[in-house]
Image (cartoon, rainbow, N blue to C red):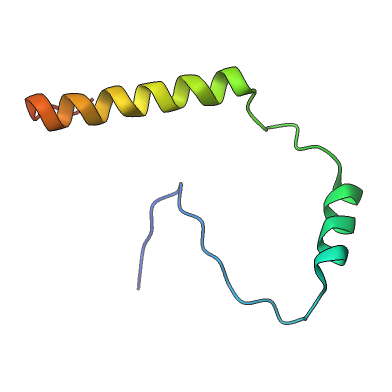
Length: 63
């Protein structure tokens, strides 16, 4: 049995061959993602990640 963290994405090969135009059509058809973070939220996440990485590299601390 294998386990993986909840926040992991696994990519698998698709069984069908579709064109890039078909992929874009399907994306347009699906509409916007209601859970997509705003640019401000993404910026905050990146800043927090950089701060954590800096603290870990400089002070050996996490979190």
